[in-house]
Amino acid sequence: MTTIWALLQQRRRAAAGAPVVTFVDADGARVELSATSLENAAAKTANALADEFDLEAGARVALLLPVHWQRAAWLAGCWTAGCEVRLPSGPDDADDADLLVTTADALPADRSRPPVAAVSLHPLGLTVPGSVPAGVLDATVVVRSAPDAFLGVPPAGTSAAIEVGGTVIDQADVVDLAQTKAAAWGLAPGGRLLVGPGTDPLDAWLAALAVPLAATASVVLVDGEHDLDRLAAQERVTATLAR
Image 1 (cartoon, rainbow, N blue to C red):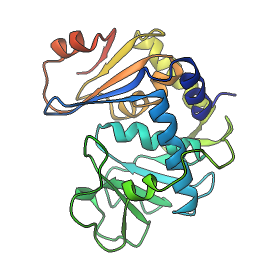
Image 2 (cartoon, rainbow, N blue to C red; image 1 turned 180 degrees about the vertical axis):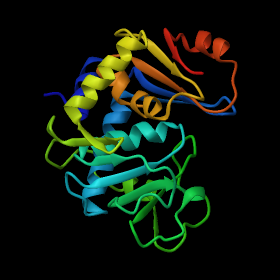
Image 3 (cartoon, rainbow, N blue to C red; image 1 turned 180 degrees about the horizontal axis):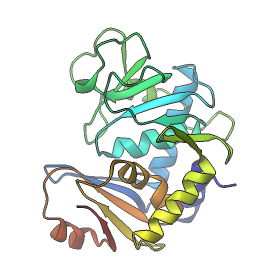
């Protein structure tokens, strides 16, 4: 059975430098993540989850992140580590998780449960501006210091991947779901999907990593107000997912 980690490795071997994820922020700044970049992010993040946060396969990681390339990086790391991703509705909706990963402006009132890591939204992945509050770790610092090669046991297709509506879907099913979504959205192999504001939240999360990998395609994640038709032409997209 196929896993996200296996798809990342296949993609890197086939087209190491080609973009898998492109992020366009509200100011029009672009960040591209190639298969090589994503594989490295997956390895470093997965190692950090094990070594710095003491999480094992099956641990629950709550990701509370806006539309951003960090979504792709953290999904890759969590799924490479065999962790189950939770998508909380807010910072105080993650008590059943083993780790909450969020931004510095969305920290929970109670930082004792679960442990919290703050993610910087800087285009180049710099550390969180200023100092993080007591009891919060700067995710950039933790991940940056982790080994570049994945040192854990590769996940299986049956490894828990994401909770959807109270049901936990494993990695093989996430890949199947991503392929189904890609077909429904008209995203063919080699195509390029634009994910605009207003996209269904779950669809936006799947499109951040699983869909482009499963469909052998790429994705453009868009935040803020843009002329989507113009942006689609500039980015040479072949399918658009936006309201």
